[in-house]
Structures are given as C-alpha cells and as structure tokens.
Image 1 (cartoon, rainbow, N blue to C red):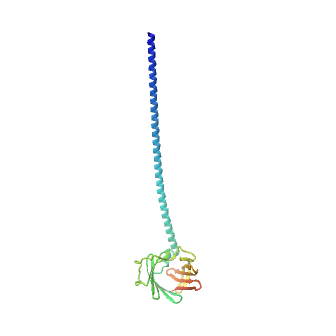
Image 2 (tube, one colour):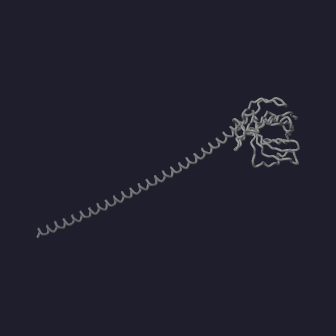
Image 3 (cartoon, rainbow, N blue to C red):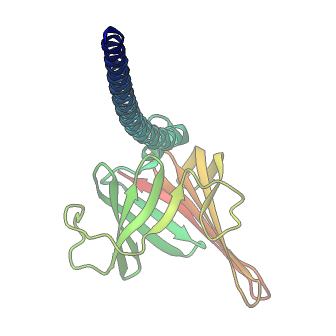
Length: 272
C-alpha cells in the first residue's frame, strides 16, 4: 500500500514537472515574440528616421539648388549690366576721342552762322544755322529758289539726318515740334571707319588739312561713301569734309564710267 502511494506521488510529480516545462516554453516563446516585435518596431522607427533624414537632406539640397540658381541669375544680371555699361562707356570714349571731350559736337557750326558755298565755280548754296539743342541742329539750305529745312541728330559720336522739309512756310526753329522721319540718314558715325568703298559712310581720315576759299582748316574729318551700279558697275563716290567749329567745309561727288564727271562744292564765306 505504501508502495502504491509512493508511486502515485511520483507520477503526480512528473505531471507537475511536465506542466512546468510547458509553461516555461510558452513564456519563452512569448518573450521571444515580444523581442521580435520590439526589434521590428525598432527597425521601423530606424527606417522612419532614415526616411525623414533623406527627406530633410533632399529638401536642403533643393533649397541649396534654388539659392544657387538665384545667385546665378543675379550674377548673370550683373554681368549683363556691366556689359551694357562697358558698351556705353566705349561709345562715349569713341565720341570723346573723335574730337576731344565733346567729340563730334566740337565740329558743330554755331547757331546764327551763315555759310556760303559755291558749286563748280557757278552755283551758290547758302547754309543758315538756325538753332540747336543738346542733341540736334537745324539748318536751312537755300539753292536758287529752293529751300530745304533739315534737322540733324548731332551728338558726340554720330551725325544723322532725322527731319527734312522742302520749301517750308516757316523757316524758324522746329526743334521743339518736329517729328523724326521713319528712314533716317547716317552722315557720320565714329564707329564706321574704313576705305569709304561701301554705301555706308565711312571715316577715311581724321587729321586732314583742307584749304578752301573761306580758310584753311586742320583736324578735318573726311567721310566717304560709294554706290556701285548693279548693271554697269559704275560708281558714284561722295566725300564730305568736316572742320571743328564749322561743320561741312567741302563736298565732292565723282561718277565713274563712260559718261563720268566730278562735282565740287567748297565753302567760300562764313558770316556769324
């Protein structure tokens, strides 16, 4: 009987031990699951942080690129402005070099001046200098019964015809009211220098000494243009001479070819 009771106690102990082992295994399994869950959560959090870091880096890179682009735009604008200023300075320097500080303005005739020319020792032409402002000069040219009112844009680096009117009723100053013609005519541009063999007037000399009946002039600008016929290759060559303080003092025209001829107009008298 005692032996039987002992066997029952032994069997009960074995059962309890087995139950204890199962419980331990379940607990270990639960702990392992919790550890895996914790590890997965940690990995997700790390990935989230990495993604946020990458997003922040991309945003920072984008901001940096935008700042670089803005800086490049500002630099380009500054370079463009410098280029414009350099071009303007070069034009001003060219004009000043052409005739001192005032450039070609030093070659303007004075308002109130009357210049008398003779063409081919026969025809008389009169230039009346009527008025001037900062950039313009008005002159009235009389040839027999014909009168042409002309307004020139006369700056430090160029001279161009911007208005003309034949036989006007009023020959007084129109500098405040004229409207420039659509097709202006360049007479002189200090940037155009060459041999004078093109339609565009070119400066062929800046140091000529020219003698005409009205006097001898130094530092004379000589401007020439050449027009060539497309059918005969004959040429018409115009040459104009500008003297300081007087303007035009001489003009010549030469037509080449079988029936070619020359014409010369010279300044004979200046009245102020």
